[in-house]
Every structure is written in C-alpha cells, then in structure tokens.
Image (cartoon, rainbow, N blue to C red):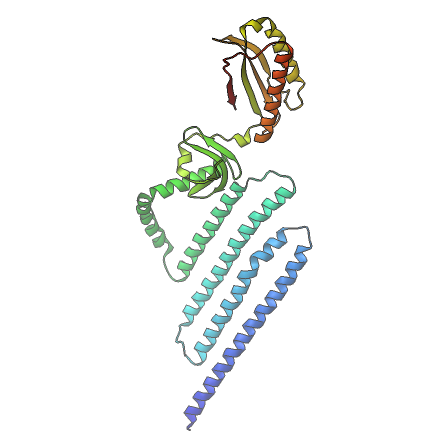
Length: 356
C-alpha cells in the first residue's frame, strides 16, 4: 500500500470521526436546549403571567430547528473544505444558512402571533372583559400572512432574485388571478368586511329576511361562514353573500318584546276598561318585566267577531327559553283576569302573535 492510499484512508477516517463528532455535538446541544426550555416552561407555569408562557412555547420548536440547521450546515462546510466530497460553493452554504435563519425567525413569529392571540383571549375572559374573538383572529391572520410574504421576499432576495421584478410579475399575475378568481376575492373581502364591521361573531344567533338563513354562527373563515340552523344542520355560506343582504342579529337585542292582541266578546264591552286596567296593574308589578321600557295596554278596535285590546311590553331577558316562560306567565295571568271579571275570549277569535 503506497503513501497516497494511506493518506486517503486517513482522510476518510478523519471525515468519519468529524461526522460523528458533529452529530454528537448537535444532539447534545439539542438535548441541552430542550432541558433548559422545559425548565423555563415549568417555572413560567408557576407564575400568574401568561406572556412568558407564550414566548417559551413559541420559541421551543424554532430554536430546536435552528440547532439542527446550523449543525448540518457547519458539517457541510467542514466536509466541503476538508475533502471536497460535496463540491458546494461556500457562498451557497452562506445563502442557505441565512435562509434557514430567516425561516426560523418566521416560524417563531408565526407561533408567537398565534399564542399571543390565545393568551389575550384567555386573559380578557379571566378578567370578565368582553372578547371579540373574530377581531383577534382577523388580526392574527393578517400578521401571519404578512410574515409569510415578507419572509418569502427576503429569502428570494437572499438567493439573488430581484424583489422589484418579483413584485412587478406579481402585479401582472395579480390582475390575471383577479379575473380568474373574482368569486374567491369577493368572498375574501366579504370575510374582511365581517371582521372589520363585526355585524356578528362566533356564537351569535343571526337571521336574514332576504335569504332563508337563520342559526348560530359556528365559524367565520376568510372564504365562508358556517352557521348551525335550528334543525342542527351546518350551513356553509360564502362571505360575499353578506355584502348584499340584510342581516339581523337577535343575539345583540337588549330585551325581547311581548306583543299580543286579544279579542273579547261584544257583550263584554262594559268590562273592557276594567280588564285593561287590571292587565296594566298586573304587568306593572310583574317581576320579569322591565318597567323602564315602554308598556302599553289599550282597547284597540272593534273587530268582526270581537272587541280587541292589545299589550306591548318588554321581558327583562334575551334568552329564548326564558322569554317564552315569561310570555306564558303573562298570558295565563291575562286569562285569569278575564275570567275573574266574568268575560270570555271571543269565539271565533283572532289572535295575532308577533315575536320581536
């Protein structure tokens, strides 16, 4: 065996030794990083501050990824300089290293934006502050999209691409995409309108007199909104529809109105004023009626087969089930008043029931 062959074998042995050393160092640093982060995570969980949890949870994976990226690139650089096995330019390695660091930073920003959103919502709920999750979700999505676009442009510039050229091409392509995907863009801007104007949010009960839409909002996405109707079916509605229809949001009502028209027999006309006054007294003392709101009880009209009086009052609740319990109690007490005064509800009777 000549001297050259011996040198080659020694080079191979050195290459193998370096390889295992670098792998060992990467694994050691990775384990050490995990131990430190887990220790910090345990300590932060003992505090009342939720923001330190956000930072630690956000940095966990990016930091681990950074260790592997830098370790692998260091190994490639070392092997490339020693034995030229990969024949990779150092400039390429530097570019890849910069791109890897940018990706890690972008991943950290994506994680921390999401974790901050969750932390803000939890913090507001713990302090009994009204939480508009749709707004926080919209802001987070815009931030994450901005991070992705900015990171992509920086990486392209790192590899030598002209950003101005990319933006110019993007502008021309954007026009073409706009024509091809106008419905998708309409849905996107419809979703943006929902996030900004906030006509409803997740959990609201909404309905539209223009369309057969009624139910509870389960999710508001960029393209469509999902609503669970009262038959428990899930309806997916493109967001662009909400730009052209009237949307009523009963979840934001302050009270529920009780409006009833009740007809008595014509021979009960002498008892009408007494019954009306008794009904007024009953409503004015009812514990579930909001007496700060308008209450009207009046003789209304001479109908074909009855003389009618009406009531308008407001239940001190917005809950659907409780409202009907209050309404039932009011109607039963009105029936008792009519019976006590020796009157009867006319037959045939026209009863108009309107729920608002």
